[in-house]
Length: 172
Image 1 (cartoon, rainbow, N blue to C red):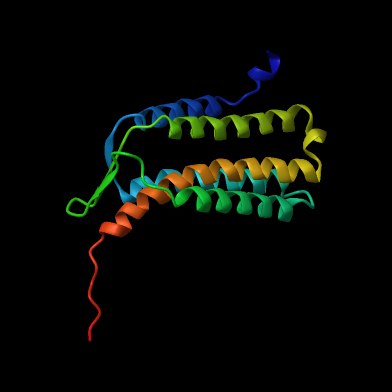
Image 2: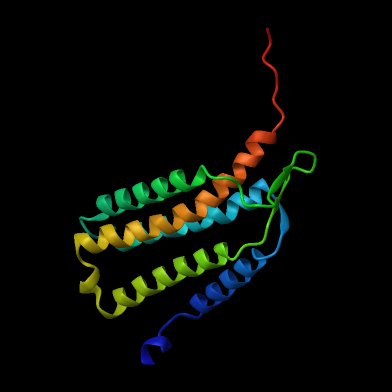
């Protein structure tokens, strides 16, 4: 209980914000490309910064970055080639996506938050547990997998945009 008293208030505010943002994702909505990508890019940056901040003072930063990049790109590539979620569409006229509601974003937001929270707690209470090459590779890969899952969904939606975007004919 004493450990919880030392958690900064902003962490709880962030948790509430992520829950609210995740709950908004559970309803069908119309969003612009910028907003669709903004959330995904922001959370990808959060995981990348987590890797850099955690292993910057250690010799394992390059391995952590490689582990994050390979797992993020691998998962995004492998799952990003599937079909867009049922009910998703892109309207060329309004330049907006119709995105069906899903609990997946909230689940991924909470998983990323939980990961960062646990790593922060372990770093504060038993930092020696994180001072190994195995921890650098494993935690970084987990951050990468979570980011890859989030980005795979965005890639599937962006394929709708690419398939319906107006094409300009090339001059003869």
